[in-house]
Length: 312
Image (tube, rainbow, N blue to C red):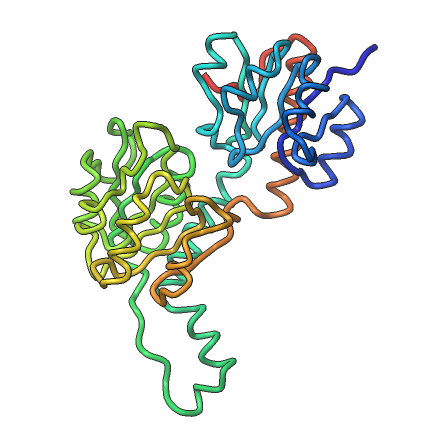
């Protein structure tokens, strides 16, 4: 039986690469020196695109693959995939949700706790020999704080469940109220105004672009902490940087950035920001599960079965 041709847009761990290439004819677009020439040579026979959430598949790439049937995203976010182009051609789309929920929620809580208690700064304080000259400055309490969660999907819910263990007062914003024990505050500005820590956990879309704008940041205020493990586009980065530089916002803990990994160098000069290299799902266990789910979706498609985690 002829193996289907698959276009791969970004690198995957070797434990995923090897079985992918054993089952399919894989064309590594990310290694092409001349992207246009590579597509001209290989795209006509491509039936599937394997991509990452940060890379997606734009209208041009989709158009270059006339035989394309399915796109599978290694990650939960599919905002970088041109959904209109998929709908127009009946191209199926799948992602890898659920398997990364716990790790993303863990990191959200971890970086919020680390930033509130100054864990990274305290480590440097000890390593640089400053402890002998005086005590580390007092930090802020984490437990018992007021938490706002912007986006109560799988990850937002998992974050809230973890925060409940810290005795926090929890509220959330979402498209609609959910049957949960936390307060529903539909307006993001109002949510920020009543929060000590605002967690951004919603999926990115044109509708949510810069939903955390200058007004939300101002409402969070000079003692507030913004935590973003979702997508950089959900936050107005220039407004965030200005507020951090002036002290209008107390601090931030961020796993995502516009233009990453080439983030705005202004972040590097700020003492009130904890920076992470987009690693919310970055554990061996989760990445293995993501790769398996990606391959399972491909196998289901080519066997004529429903996708396991189809994007509606």
